[in-house]
Length: 194
Image (cartoon, rainbow, N blue to C red; front, side, top):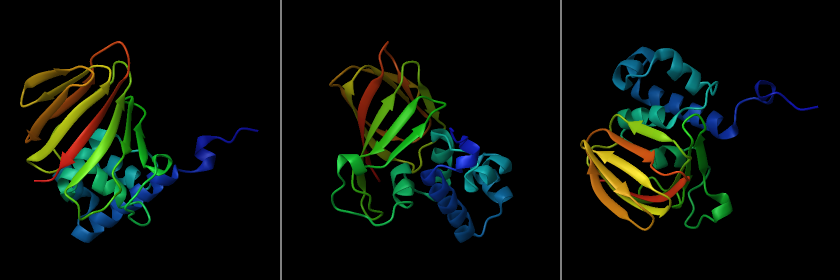
């Protein structure tokens, strides 16, 4: 007999992530209302994410990372047990925004004290992810397309990248990543804190 998702409980990563989000809010001494005001995310959505009743989207995590001054990889690494120097491919943290068709793999071994990290991104055909602000203003990003075609919009400029192309930019405002072809796109994102 197949177990219903609701009966199985929340995804373990979502549960740890929700608990960490609640801890970060408590560390700041903010109510859900104060966090909602700072992040532009509704109180109910924040509450449901903290209780792991929903799997947070990439956009939601980006907003919260901005409020807490972290990159998404830093936040995700905080829900892992012990930082390691080497992380085998099979053990790398994978997170999905199923509704957006986005899969994110944290390639670099997680460590809160490091300024650089590597992330593998995969966008399915038609996937389009918009971030209203960077998690850290002035964040440096290098986007290297491994397979497919990717359109990156930053500072109202569209950059069309094909397989092998690499784009370097500093992120100050909204950005958008869109699968620009008729096949899924796979890319590496190198992130460097300012």
